[in-house]
Length: 333
Image (cartoon, rainbow, N blue to C red):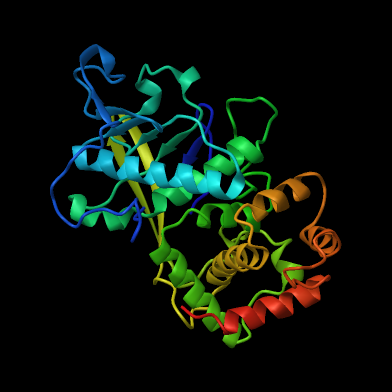
């Protein structure tokens, strides 16, 4: 997760693995390209024949990486990100450009009019068997998709400059983070639910009256005091690239830092509401309601009336929160 900033159409700076699904990787060092992931050579390569990066074309857009196996990782992540974002928010993303940071995109003569989003994110590991280290890519893609297609900063603008005071899109921070987690792989998402269950049983959740209005802790500065912050400067293509990394102990049951609580509670909210309403696109509807000036509590009240409260969500935020906590305590994970 990270603050997202500017590039053509979209540049969300950020950094995937799917388990038990069509998006899963084989645990081996063999690399077989999907049939629709095509290496671009010579004049067809945006980077030219002397490029330090390999360029591929795919149904999801251009992919620029330094090794073949990394292209497969990026392809699989984009595949999962596209499919799940459409599944939950009803919008099929358009083609974009992914780079592992091998080249400076501003120096490359690709057709920017054909690129609707750009993600620059490093791919970790040394081969396909370590693809599980890269599960954050789809998460970051979804952050960007929300901003490009549902919550853009400017009407019709291709260059989106996110104000530094905002986490990502103009959407409420909880919704921005929830959208990103909605496309995650099952292993990572279920770990979030386990963490939330511990929170619920310890009466450590954030009251919804605060949760729906608070800033993301990454923006407000309420980060884990034990986090280690490192700044790395790297010379790439004659330009200096600065990367800031925050390293903290992986969250788990009993970790109730404000950052963990905010994120895991958002994941649990996504699971709770999609399960109770039997509607995989319910948050697309919630998003539209809020964008038109409504609140989550207002959406809840109208749902109780229009759907005869068939999901038994309660008709007030207080009732909804009580049912949410009871659900969390009883989770079977």
